[in-house]
Length: 428
Ligand code: EPU
Image 1 (tube, rainbow, N blue to C red):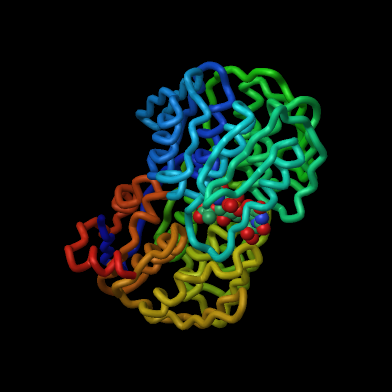
Image 2 (tube, protein in one colour):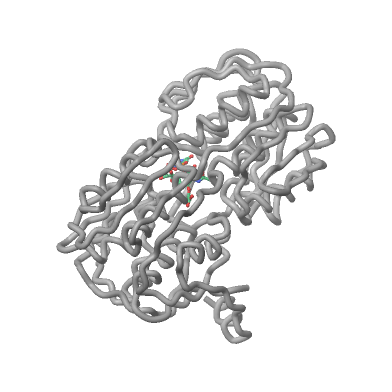
C-alpha cells in the first residue's frame, strides 16, 4: 500500500488529457454481459474499478482482453455464477452485475455492493425496478438473490432520481418482453453513454438523457465497438485544481457542456475560463470571491465535485456555503482540511468555509475517492509537504494521477507505507 506526498505551494501550467469516464466504464463493462458476441470499449480509464470489473467478468466465464485503454469482452461463455462475496464488495458499481445478469440469465446472486462510504446508499429503487419487471428479489445473508421466469416490460416511476437505478433497470429491461418506461429517470451523461452502447448492441431505447426512458425489449443483443465519453468528474477536478494553483492550464478531451454548472461557479468566483470544442482553458485569478454551491442531480452541480471544490473555497475571500442535497454526510474530508489549517464547520448537510486561509502541509487520510481528490488539491495549494494515506480510494477513480500532475509541473510522488503505518491503517 502506498501514500502520496505532495510538495505544495508551486504554480502549475501545461496541458492535461482527461481519461474515459469512470462512472460510465463501471456500467459499460457489465453491460457487455448482455451481448452474444464480443464487445469492444475504447478509451477506458486505467483505474482499479475497471480492473476489478474485468476480473469479475472473468469469474463468470467471460474472456476479457484489456490493453491500451481498450477492452474486448467475449461474453459467449459466461454463466450465471453466484458472486456473493469477494471483489463485488469492493466496489459500488458491482450492482450493475445484478441488472445485466438478470437481463441475460434471468437469475443472479450478487453480494451487497461496497464503494465509498458517503452515508446511507440504499438500492431500493433498483430492486423496485427489478420487481416491476417480474423478478423476485431477496436478501439472503448479505447477498441479493434475483430470479425471474421471464422479464416483462413495465412502467416504473423512480421515487428518487438515481443514476444507478436508471442504468440498472435499463440493463434488465433491454432483453425483457415488451415495453418498459422509466419515469423520473436520472439524466446524467453516463446514462446516455450506456444507452448508446446498448443501442449499438441492438437494443431499442429512446429518451436517455431525459426523465422518461422508453425501452422496447429485444430477444438478442450482439457485439459492437463503442468509445466511452470523457470523465466529467476527473475533468472538473483538474478545472478546480487549475483554478486553485494553475497559471494557465489547458484541459483536453472534455465535453464543456457536461460541466456548465462548475464552469459557471468558477466564473462567479472570478476565474477566467475559455471553452473550445473539446478543451477548456483555465486562467489565473488573483483573488477569489466566496460562492455558495448546492449539489443537485444533473445538470446541477455534481455531488462528486463538492469535495474538490471545498479545497478551492479555502482561498476565497468571505464565507462560502457548500450544501450536499444528494449525500448529506459527504463531509469526511473536512476534518482533514482542518488539519491543514482550513476554517470550515459542518452544520447538517452544509459545510461553511471562511477564507482566505493559507493551507499548510499535514498528514491526512483520504476516506473516499473524492475526499482524496479534495486533499490532493489542498496539498497542491498548501505550503510544505502533505502526506495522504488511503490512496487506494484515489486509485479507484483517477487514472495516472501522479503522472498527469507531474506533467503540469507538480512535485508529487508515491511512497510505500511503513509497517507501522500499515498497522495504523488496519486499526483505523
Ligand atoms: N438512492 C436511494 N435509493 C436507491 C438509489 C439511490 O435512496 O435505490 C439515493 C442515494 O442514497 C442518493 C441519491 O439517491 O442520495 C442518488 O444516488 P444515485 O443512485 O444517483 O447514486 P449512485 O448511482 O449510487 C452514482 C455515482 C456516484 C455519484 C452519484 C450521484 C456511480 C458508480 N456512482 O452513484 O459517484 O456520486 O451517482 O451522482 O456511477 C463517485 O464517482 O465518487 C461517486 C460516488
